[in-house]
Image (cartoon, rainbow over all chains, first blue to last red; front, top):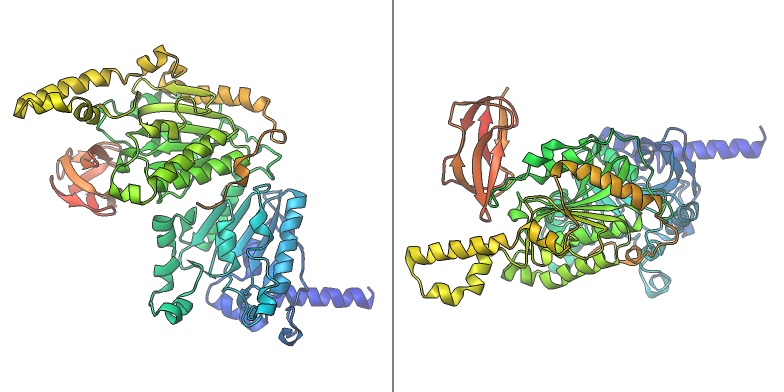
Length: 514
Length: 70
């Protein structure tokens, strides 16, 4: 071996083993924490990493201290045999802060991923921009804002894991991603508590500011919260398993269980219209092996969004959840649905809607939370979506929420009602008091109650799926047991002639965050 | 081993379906809750003896203990 190769191998080995210093790596391991390299190694297939930018160093010569990487590492690898580009913030070098050299390294990786046409995965925990590198007009004015990733048009899937204190580019990149998982103990925010306290004197802990519970339940700015590092890795792998390598491909079909009717589905939706039930039970019986990946499970909870396989094909399911607020649509549910529709449409994933919603939630709170714009935004997304779409009205479908669940003529190729379906502009019990208010006002006490019930029953007959089927408003009233067969057959027809390259891709340019 | 049944929603206990100390099967209805004018059934996740932690009319928050199945 010549001297040049020997030196390369020695330097490379040291950079990979010691990162920003053997002591720092040991300190992280002592605390039970994974280094950037551990994260990457634990995600990718063994020995598959082709590293890019191993020898990157800080732009400023006075900052170079003999360690490599400049705080971010990454390269091209394989996950479950499929090509993936992966990067991670390296806390052992300059706390993983964002700076000129490592930004070029990450932009380069991202562009290569785009050219290769494979997903981009990132482990984020950057403390923010490197100071004082970024201070002053000379340096600030050279910047390019959020960087090249902000120009993405969902050509390749992008997934992030927030695994530490994330305040810089890693936070911005999470908002630009298709999937974000956050580990308990990690923080996701724009500004750190320290800077907040200096600027406004507000005192807040990292957990209160941007901990998993905050994003999982209040902001919806992550797709999944997990308790452990291993769960974060499993979540990334699960998400990738539902994605195609890039937007020019349809997700690979997996071996499927034999097609069969599912008689269990007949008993899951109660006929009593006031009785709730857990839609996850319907979902579990409908999809292959009962397995699905639910996104934002505790945000916008009246609506479930989940990736699953049906007849071996990846589908995106949007299902009302009658257990939560009766399944009534809310501004948060619209945000969640819109992001999910954009994801499915961008990556050639057909959508299945399961509707049981009494309508949009009404009242001051939702109106002031921008219900109008959020509801219209979701409906706009639906009319622009071009992936195959199938809708089942399981029970209630009222008002604009009917269309928001892709009922009527919103673009679904097949719209079916279960025998329990009821469709109208407004719930009969509410409509009675609106339509017949003057008549009812003339009556009192029990007489008024009885007349209201009689009129509601009359209106209720008008909500039957047979009325909708009579005028071809829905395609068919179906036996719930046939639902998996109808989906499988429809997808087979639609996907056999589906061309991911030549179709319109309007939603791929919509924002990744709402 | 005892399994705790916790509420997935915030609402009222409308009806108790399984008596305290009764033997219940998997999927048997224990309680019907009421929230947003909807009745939300709570089923037993396992077979065992039901020990109720709530009474009809109680207001419960998400995550509150409803029953223990022994």
